[in-house]
Image (cartoon, rainbow, N blue to C red; front, side):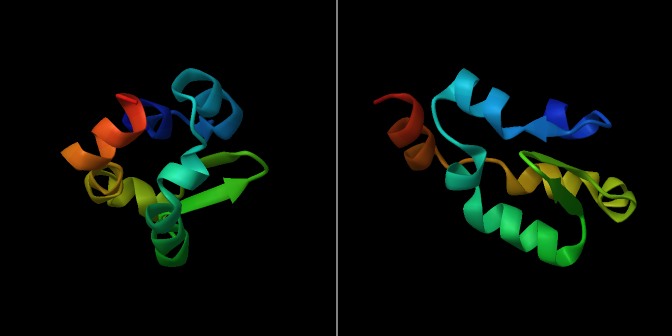
Length: 78
């Protein structure tokens, strides 16, 4: 997520799902909703990306996408 959000095109859910086997909208539902509400990310079709305000708070945005160990193991270590 970090690297994708740093790019102007942001992160594409189809690519994310293909790579990780889970939709970013499922995995990060609360985080995405919170960041959309703050105006730090924008969603267009299947893609999310940083807004100008989000770029100012990039570290906070990126930190939102850190998974705790239990969630990581549940999702990626079936």
